[in-house]
Length: 231
Image 1 (cartoon, one colour):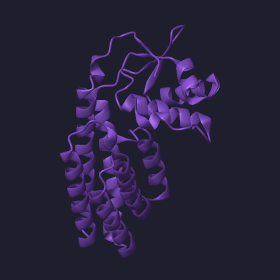
Image 2 (cartoon, one colour):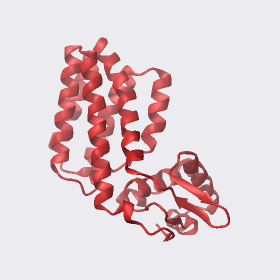
Image 3 (spheres, one colour):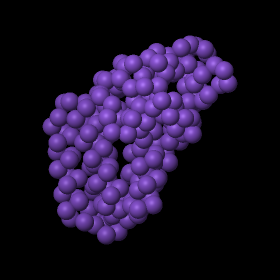
């Protein structure tokens, strides 16, 4: 099980449970067609069934789970293009933020991005790498995106695994991701809006392909049609 799935639930229970189940699905631990055992999730997280039910309703609106009358909630039949398209959409919208930042470069933001890059290169902890990767992209989104664009990006970011680099990926993916970050910073420093958009959107396109490879390796699309998921 994902290490992140063991984190204590606090704050808004529905949101915390929803993120827990998202991580289980998007990491490949819960696979398409598997029925979700709500009691097991409630017991594992130490909550009642109510926030679990509410969380699954939220995930149903996001297309990650689907309810079947008199049978329960099941992981939706996600396809490879569902994963690719999600990253593609996020990359294009974040690319808009990058292009705007390139049009009005902020020296302080660029210095922060380079500082995050140095930390990413130095760490061998995949969870720390995830945290720094998130920080890198948040810096760009906050600096370049409008309030409306940030709100959409926030929603899209929820449907990405929170521990991507903790998954069994090729280790050279870390080096490739860092190199692509370098390209994004270079475009921002050059004030090249078109290049900033292209580099950032391309980076997320590649990340989507990597996410598909991770799920394929874990047999995500090989699940039986009517199994029960106990998480």
